[in-house]
Length: 162
Image (tube, rainbow, N blue to C red):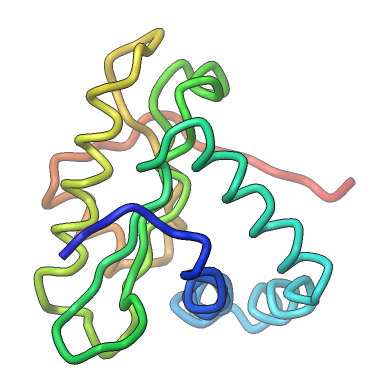
């Protein structure tokens, strides 16, 4: 079952968010990236991330949704679509994060979360009728998942240290 995030989900969401962040390096075998992501996951980051979640949920209660499965006390995945007020970042709906705990990968959880994200995006008043997300080009599993859903490459994000 997919449902909107509730404040009582904060600890479980944070555990999933940590899994998401730590997986960004390990999924691609980039130990340097994994170390950088792990270093940022301190108490300040946790507090600020959960505050940001609350602000986004206050704007759209379905900005963050969680997946529950029978027999599990905590959510097993989540999806985060930025609120419409942030759509001008990419002139589109922005799929900020989707994550499924490893034990639940290969089930229908990721598909259900993505369908929930698309539903939220379709309801947004957008500059352009599309949804975008950033996917690590070395994450073959994620690339295959999004391609199966009809996502196509559209530009490429570049970054540099500040």
